[in-house]
Image 1: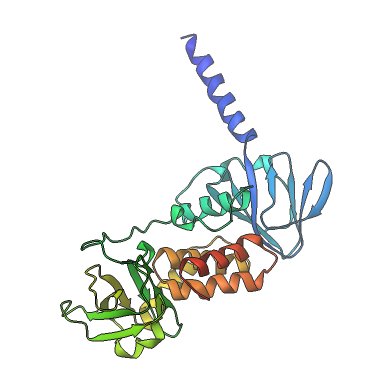
Image 2: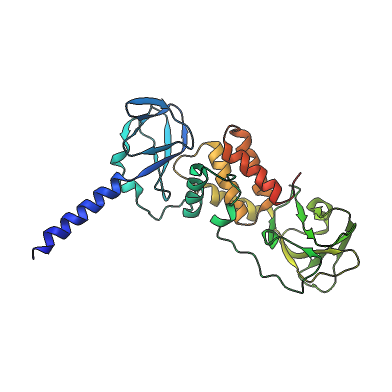
Length: 301
């Protein structure tokens, strides 16, 4: 029986220690929001790290969204001064609508001291590429392009690498009804082809397959290209948009939508949202660096 008080005391101490060790990342804000650390008040800044000894001050009509311990996200909308040590419950992982992977990703990118921010996005994404088929040949297609969902209207390159010193390559496009014979073929001198070159050959709502090879050679490694109709894509974007925190500034929302669209293989569309995030908040290193990394990954010039 003597063990019971000790266990209760240990449990309380562990809970207290957990609350005292909480760290916070300022994810997004609007209006007049400031932070107070060691009695020094300063303006809020996206990406700023805080511990639970600090406070946030929210003016009337303002809002701030914080990430706690790289896992939980919560928003403060009512005016007032809020000591962060009062938000222990908000730091608990819950069934939030915001993607847990995305929250962990933002935390990691905004707090890392080395490396290029935004360059390791795939490590935090759920999607896994298809298994490559066929023999090894002179052309290699990045697994990022194993499946591409495309809603039309935005040009985007399909690219590949070559192990041969070739000057010309052939691009093949197949319908889902016949993957033995391409219904469209083009010869290109670059290691990529814009979707705009063959978009009119396809019909929205259908699935196609594509590959590339050194001219005169074959490549059995087919990749999936889904030409999604606009209504389906609009529904997907709306679902993603509504998965955000109670408050997100335009730049943060655009960046999150871009990340989730890339995770869902909507690459051309993700590019437009990454571009929007970097344009709306050009001073944000993460947004600018991610845009450059995305362009490099997908051969966008």
